[in-house]
Image (cartoon, rainbow, N blue to C red; front, side, top):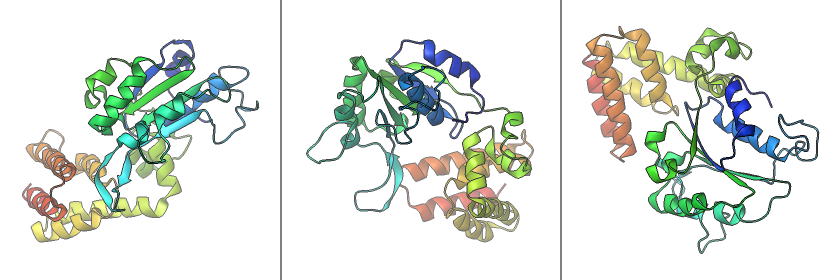
Length: 292
């Protein structure tokens, strides 16, 4: 299991006695990978670091590891504007859908069970309340890991029952073990997961880069051209955060235009999360960017 960086965390986790953790830090920095490593070490015949050769370590899909993630589709199959972890994913309901509470209360195949709630900031209120019950009295063999960008985005009742482990961006010197491409390294912003995504999806990454550059050029031409370029960029998932990153090279960081552009992007993302019409959001953002 190739983990870049986070040596302090890898040394700390085997020593702590907590059962509930909150892994915070940027997307793609390695929080999920460390959670899998932690599961491997807890169940390895030799303990930490996991050997990679025992009966537990050889399993690719480990029976004592569960990952709950936000759903990106609605019940009708449409793409959700705002991902959400539903109550049915956490607690038993009338449906036959597997859930965290049923899974974590059964004994592990090896020694310890680890349940990961990836995107804990997307927990609905009912799901969070159901999860709180198991956080208060988890089974002795269980560990629960919440993953979120920051503690401020997670419900305080969940944060107060968790040990926070903060993940920092990985130094570029370590990322260069994966690639020397300056464009990919700039995109990664210290996140190995972003490097791996760019290398595994070169066509999509190139489309993201070229369409972002096209938008930055269109801003100078006027709102109509900016809107056209923004619609093309909107077809690429995760485009707005990358656009915010590229604005640093387009405007002087201390300039009012740069600050106004970041504020416009933030408001557009908030509006999108609030289910405001996508066309309306894009039109508003195009007007704002073309005025800078």
